[in-house]
Amino acid sequence: MSVHLIFKSLLRRKVVTALLLLQLAVTLGLVVNSLLLAGAARQLVEQPTGLELEQLLTLWVKPTSAAMRLEPALSEVINRQLAAVRQMPGVDSVAYANQIPLRQGGSNWNIFEQDRQDETNIESVPYYNSSESIFQVLGIELITGRLLTELDRGTTNIVMTEKLSRQLFAEQNPIGKVTNNGVVVGVVSDFFSQRYASDAFYGQILMAPLHRAEQGYHLIVRVAQGQSDTVRKQLTEVIRNAEPQMDIGTVLRMDENRDEVFRSEIGLATLLAVLSGLMLLVAMISAYSHAHFHALQMQKEVGIKRALGASKARVLLDVLSESWLTTAIGAGFGILVCYGLNISLAKVISIPAVPVWLPLLTMVLLLLCVTLATWYPARIATRISPATATKTL
Image (cartoon, rainbow, N blue to C red; front, side):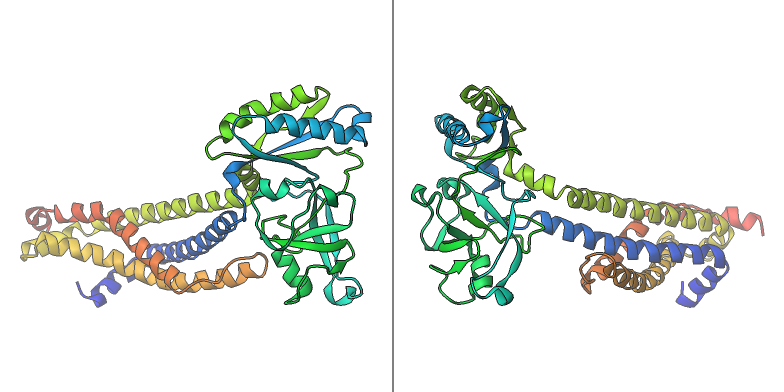
């Protein structure tokens, strides 16, 4: 069937054709932007953290006794807990900290180079008050300078991440630089600190007494490869045996902490993927209904074609060609819809720009779905007997 005849056939059903074109255009526009949002959310969740997530366990604890939440009793409790955890099979190292990476802990300071506040001030940088084993626990590497030791406890010496160092001091040697938070003695590899800090990979580590633990503190445990499940089953009991008067939270692997932080993004990616599938399904149902109704309407025309010698393959191709042309036109409008929708969404949310290949790939996917949906109605049209059609003439 020629394109002219297909257009003529479509124009006989103006309203139905217009609605189908509108649905196809909207479907393509929504699917493209849904895929972009889902991909951006997934990329955010799966970004490198600089941490070996599956080998790190975290646990929030808080002494129930008010006296044990203050020094010097607090340090004694922490040391007993750390010693008990170190003795567990499968544990490589353990440290305490006022907060843990990835999670929003609230322990943030501004930081700037002394005497250069206006030029170097950074508003929100997480700080980790911990023990010297924190570097081994997190698996972060020394870039320059030295790591903190117990000799630094109570001093103003700090270690910072490489990205923070570059932001503060550019290409200068950071060792010995004085900041409002202390003297820089070392720079370590970047790790994901907090999502809503000035930068997710800014971090500073110091060794000062906790003084008080009214909000509790965290234990971070590094386990041997493949031992996380075994250790986590025993960890709560070991902590309680070291000090019974203790509120103990849920033991979480670091990747579970990450999933909790990005829970809304993970949910959004899942929802949009399901939504895209449903929109394609609805488009297939509409294409099926349109083709099936049309096949029933054109029984006489198909029968005459068959009587004049048209093969089943030719009739099948005619019906499918109409669906392909309809889909191509709808997808053409859909490309305009997807770019317009993308521009509108970019004004209110963060969404990547539409790459050229994605609408084209989605259009191919839409063509495949429509072809699959209209195959059965097209097959029905080929079964019309020439005798059946000519009897009514």
